Image 1 (cartoon, one colour):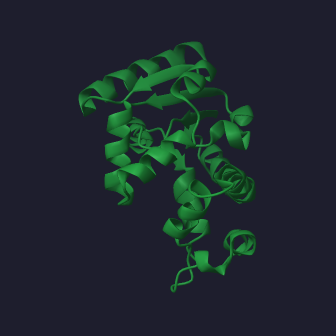
Image 2 (cartoon, rainbow, N blue to C red; image 1 turned 180 degrees about the horizontal axis):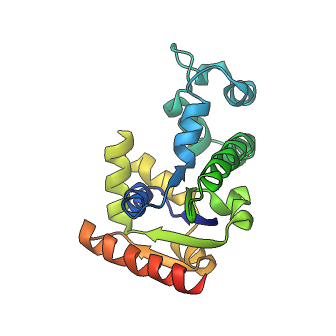
Image 3 (cartoon, rainbow, N blue to C red; image 1 turned 90 degrees about the horizontal axis):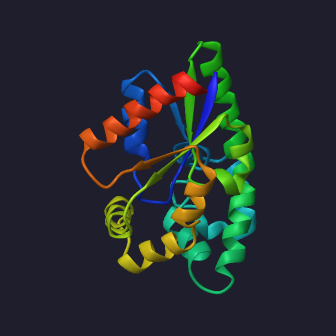
Length: 202
């Protein structure tokens, strides 16, 4: 089974790309969704985060309060250092669960599977992939998507983008680039071409 790493900055539309791939029978693992699951209730991952960043990041329901954690790691003093600590702590738990799910797809004889990982390179998981695809979108499009999705201010959305790798850096590391600024038909056409190329040459 080919493992395809899918990356791109926040708001680039990786989820929409995965939706299209699934229409062609290619499953995907959303590592952000995995992170949500791992921090939705008491568990090793949430306990490790609370130990590092304080119990105030745990909501009254006992799950991770992402807004409070985001305010800690994206804003204020030493934000880069705090974000680095968050990534190192969470990556281990996320990648272990991702590998378990990939094993399941392999046992089901899936020809390929996508790992949607915003921090693909930072986590080192790119080294476990057979090929890499990145999703790129205009800055203003990304800001609008982040604000609508996460219900945060423009300033917070811009800070999030600023904390991530540049498009140029991401593109230089990938086998394929998908531009997600237009409509679903354009996105689908690009993905059909990529699937055909993968089947022929990888």
